[in-house]
Length: 159
Length: 395
Image (cartoon, rainbow over all chains, first blue to last red; front, side, top):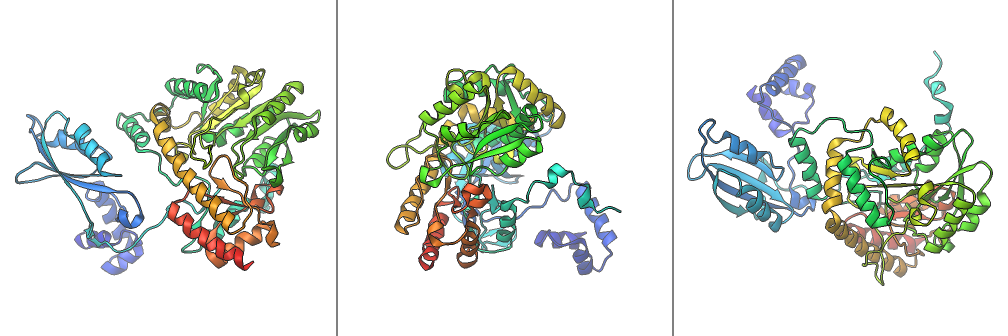
């Protein structure tokens, strides 16, 4: 399982056959493992790791330390999930140490992100404080070094 | 076994393969092409619109809506259309929310045409008009507008085309692919013809927010719809949507405004073929109509700047091109180079990796022109223009 996950982390677009060859297993075994991993929520999804700057997008990313009031039933879960559901929140983790949640918020520009934090995040019942740090540059993202550029993703010719 | 090709319905077989599709496949295979062939905004739908769709999903709104569309959306549409066009429609029974204006067009022809009924419209035009009329067993009757006339549709030409089989006049201004805007006096004359010959007018207003006025096109312009003239509301089907101004192409949302009897007839088909437009698109559209004006203007100004760039550079490279009053297309005249539209477009693609769409894909009147879309990043347009300049210099 670990070896399969490692493969997928590097390139989720490998075919079942390619994965089977690399791991010395049958395709059926691979399929079974994938189904199991998805079923128990070990694999949440697949996506391309994008460097927005290279994509030519206007983009600002902020890392926010959030302190919460834990609740009687459920601790931080309810609030954390509520925060996590916002589209602007691209990552959300419960952390040990000086704050509770590490939240990454992304938007088109500084103003938009700041507005989201002040209007939607800080205002939530149960949020004690936020400390916002703006990301300046991506060197590495999800195990990929930032190098390649990406283009316009629309169909190239449409009526 | 009889070949599958033989089993395709005659009406469908009679529709020629799309010129756009062929060109699309050529462009697909190549790297590093700057495509000026994309007929949709390069902007994503504004965030607040997307967020409204998301919020709608969060709340769990995933069910069918009324066939006509959410009443709250129809109410917003009625308000919007009244402000924009000065025509009042009753949201209860005169507005139908459709899956894009494409579906509305299909519905209107299927609702109005008996086999052999004629529909008059102007070319060059959007690629779906002819097939949609044909599939409804109607007869397309085209009027070739001319580059020398800035692609204006002349009432005199419409009159000459009217026969006892004519049922509908179809209009699209600002026009895809030419960007032409119809002068109001000509529109009035066409309205008079519709009344005189008791015809229905279908007007596709999809680009109406994208109008460029003033010296440099930076001023917004008010669009006049034929539906607003006296005697016209009762005989017009007004089509509009969200794809271009609000950059909501993928939401697949449009609407038809028409007197109850016509709306009912369209709804009769729609209720069976589509049932309803997607609820989350409808929720997003409500947000767009309520709060989207600022973003629309922001995008329009961005298009205006690119339009200026293209006009300036086309003039410099002596590529004749009339100044389009709306939409986001330039339709330069390439006849002086002695190439067909297709030859020009193919060679430009092969030699300079710039994709434009041959004007012939939009009708006979489009031959001799190519369509260059400026719904693409400014700096990409700049590079594309450099390449086009180099190309035409060699011809």
